Amino acid sequence: MIPFEKIVLNELNRLKSKNLYRKLRYPGGFDFSSNDYLCLSKNKEVLKTLKKGIDLYGAGSTASRLIRGHRNVFEEAETEFAKLVGTESSIFLANGFVANLGLLDAIANPKTLIFTDRLNHASILDGIRISGGQKKYFNHKDMEHLKELLQKSDKTKPKIIVSETVFSMDGDIADVKELIRLKKEFGTVLILDEAHALGVFGKNGAGVCRIENYITEDDLAQINFRVYTGGKAMGIEGAFIACTENSKEYLINKMRTFIFSTAPMPCIAYTLIKSIQLIKEMEKERKSIQSNASYLRDTLVSMNFDTLQTHSQIIPVITENENDAIEFSDFLMKRGFDIRAIRPPTVKESRLRISINSEAKRKDIEKLIETIKDYKKEK
Ligand SMILES: Cc1ncc(COP(=O)(O)O)c(C=O)c1O
Image 1: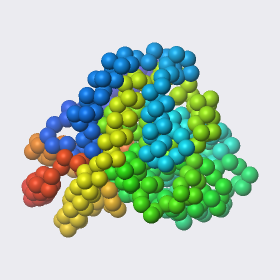
Image 2: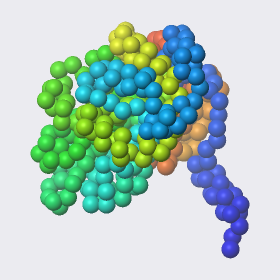
Image 3: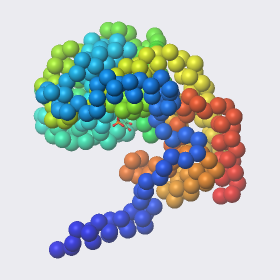
């Protein structure tokens, strides 16, 4: 038998030979890579609230919420979050990964057909996997394909459609209206992951589903679950699943990542309430993000870079191959821009993933463009 250490080394060597080896790297240079879209992770009010939260609630919550870990502040955060996004209720989790994982596992079983966009996040795929449900990929954002798959599927089986709204690596946006229409036509459950939309899109930063005059209140109520994370635009960590009161009660009783895990530190929920208040007020920041993102995207396109179909603060720049992605990122990192290479298996086509936050000024974008031009010249 091959010793385990040897298997490990062989695999690491294989990854290295294919330019797929990953190593940890500290933040460095101007932040064009994090998901801290509103820069709330360094916001003074957020930091003050977090410290106060520790004084008020202590450190760990000591147990799961169904045992001794429950606190009033979790319910307050859930109520405030539900108000922000316009649902009856919401449930607070440790992070977005366990939110998706636990949700899919709780509502699907081996009889369930789960229609999932080909580019959905790993946490969604892993949720499908552990639920035992039957995975049906539809081509990225291809509503005709989704419809075809739904038409062909067994009418008697329970069905779920799941999609991100702003896609984390491509930066494009799902056709939420059509997803709701298909959900209604085929009587499915609908889950939308708004991880990268929260804070950046919609009225009060409440996400794509809350873009003004986009989705009617009746249609909004058709979305069974909306998933949001606290670790991106909210600047902290945690997650909320927004849903009805009944669905929340169901998840409290069924969701294993909620039931069998120590509740997050109460100060996190306390500080997320502050983030909710701040996000609502950050219209100016949202406008700046959108205008800088459009400017960068249009300039890159005019320079013949492929930025896919992005319409958000996330701008992919497709590279020739894995090696080019690494070299491009290294070049920018050395010149003070924190921009990372994203490679398979995270994505199919290697790329840089540039994200625009509210601290980026036009002059920062221009400096970045000049540096990208230098890379092109040197290459
Ligand atoms: C679309 C999407 N959903 C869920 C998650 C997981 O969220 P968290 O980072 O809070 O675990 C991510 C994180 O990258 C994501 O991009």
